[in-house]
Length: 404
View 1 (cartoon, rainbow, N blue to C red):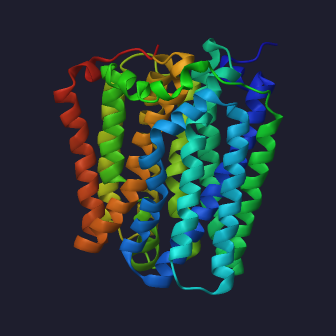
View 2: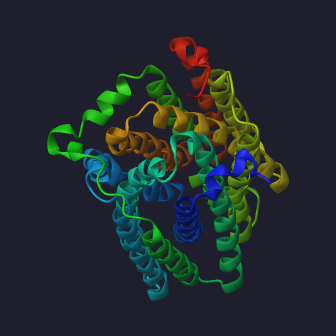
């Protein structure tokens, strides 16, 4: 009896080992993020401090992005991932010590967040560019879908587990210890993969900016990355979730955990749906439509005072965002030669980091300035409007058809 095509990538031992390692690190990072968000907002009650956490994690990418792409092309990607994930575990132990010591000075917390951002800056391009080495070209769309599913499963379980542990044990340092163990397990598990080696000698100092030149030479790639950047930069509400959980919805750490898990649940279901029914035609229209839906769901979330409605809107936003992620990642990987993947993935990570981590800073700044509800609503409007503007300004994106 033959295996259905939708399971092809899972038949590959290296791919399965890689996903096992990823589930550990994703769980660790998500659990740690719940603890930090609740910890910071409980200590200070200031939305701006939540923004500073995002900025601390973004700074390494902003400063070092040319080097992180070259590293992914020049060094063994497996070993680079193991080193980075071990560093995340150590930085998470630093967060545990901060809470255990009873300190209220946030400088140490920001430094640990910076260290986590530094490790993620180097690991993300390597993580993205190693995947095509583990699967044959014909399996890649299926592998990408399953890889996204694994990420979303970790993004569901991590926040829910983190919130439950926090509510049960009542101490952030205990949550951070769990996160550190999981991150270390990911670093150990990745060593089960075969050595990958450098792609070529193209990671030399003279070529570190080739990635950004390559992206700017591909209109659909640049447009899809830019659209995601603007939509999530302004429409993302992750940094504001501790405020919504505590002050708007009147919940505790468990409510925060579920709020963080809801987008991932929507994304996971969408990823499985795409895996069973791959996107065949009209990719550009689907991409733009998904961003409009993401923005609309964010607006309703911002206006909601009911936990179930808020969870539903975050679920919808996560599903819509997943469509955008799959299409964007396929465009990036299909149009990029292997010797360029590390540097192009670094540019991709720069866009993602600007939208996510810098977006958290923007969210905190906006919430401190105009209030948390207006900040979320305005962000959703900007996200939806960005898709309409992209359709007008980049007609080739609207007409983009097949993912190949």
